[in-house]
Length: 104
Image 1: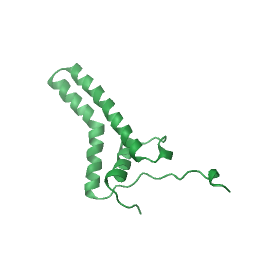
Image 2: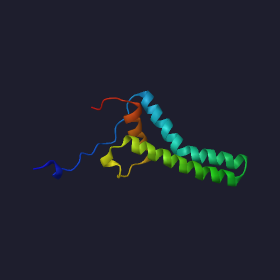
Image 3: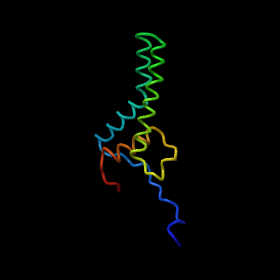
Image 4: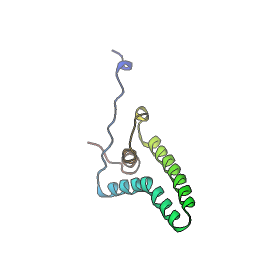
């Protein structure tokens, strides 16, 4: 039996351990997920509704690009086409690029 007939091994989403690493994960997830809404709402309330909507749309685009770059930098090549939530992408990124802990 050749190695070509075996399916590729799928890695599970890594578990982030440690207070510092979890704090980094929560901060990055919050920044990517909620900053466009918060900043767009604040700008819309302070200046103009249309400015707030424009900044919300622009920052949503920027957060999507950042999330995509994090996905490419951390998720294995075989698994990149699978669907992952933003939290899962952040977990992959923090575990692979920031917190270099050994997995058990």
